[in-house]
Length: 108
Image 1 (cartoon, rainbow, N blue to C red):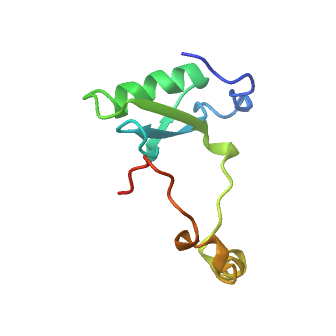
Image 2 (cartoon, helix red, strand yellow):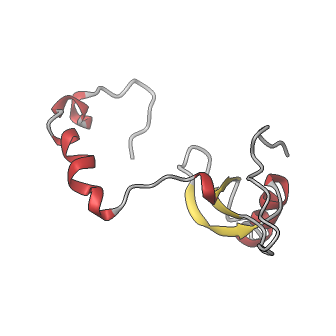
């Protein structure tokens, strides 16, 4: 198992006794998208990966696991729906019907 060079979040402050929180994403089949499975606490990425394996892949439900420090995730809020997503509705060329599927690609 390998980890990214900057995958360890900042060390918790002296008063904080909990390990950092990591978000876990699992892949159930080759080519399938990774789905958010849950969260684990761990000191570093390697331990987070092992904890995630023990919790979310003990029955061989996953073939791949990603762990991401929760502190690094930036997400939109429900209040952002209008200003954040409306501009894409004006760009019809981004809709899937404007793209051709290459030969040999299976569409589900």
